[in-house]
Image (tube, rainbow, N blue to C red; front, top):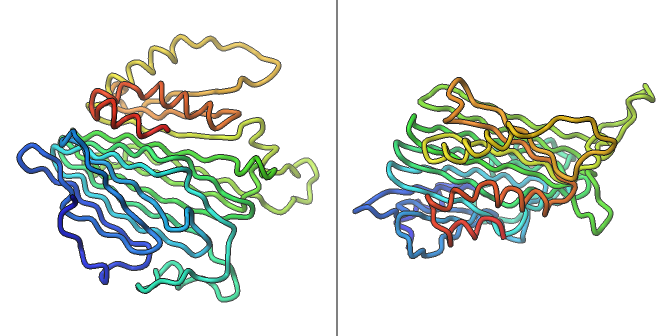
Length: 316
């Protein structure tokens, strides 16, 4: 069971805090708080060295004006796996604010009257010495006309490990949606011992057509034929083996001209001068399941650090 909770009255709507501590060689959640529409769940595990937290929202998704503010602290010698249950669904902007008994977020309060506010998810992570954070959520799926911004900041010690998965799908294909979102903005910034080593930004927008007909391409046309894009950031001692395996695979890829794009493409780049200790992987696939299967197989070496049964929960 999680430890003592911070008073909900001190959190704004959508606020949450998680602190993972170590006691007697076991990981335990010493702080665990969340307010509507954010919901946190932590199941019991047989392996006491690892903790899992599911980051969820009531109603199965986010709507215009929702603002999630989550702070996560992974203390020394602990391992935390953060997951979601199903894709993070972002619904079309709505002018009404969710009803909640807690204070509205500053983000929603600053919205211009008469305009539907966007959805914001702001997460701050701190990983202490010999700690490990594995952020492996399901992808974000923006519904038609949805506007979503996500800002994630990671502050880690030199000998800490972080695995960050950030991915987005084209929408609900069963309803004919194909990159018909209004705006998607995602930032992942990594600081090691106070020094920025990586900042990845992705911006997707369906803008009004330009007067120049040559530029009048929809977002779907620009991103075609792929329906899912993923970014994985790996940094720290526990992922050196994974980075080494990826480096070997990537070095064996032959570059040749093709008449049509492959079903799945991926690339690898190093973080900083220490190529063995940090890398960024980018993946694009024609189907979300293709990308999921590739990620599941590629990151399989993480099993030795969090356990086989725990890793199985990440890609279901």
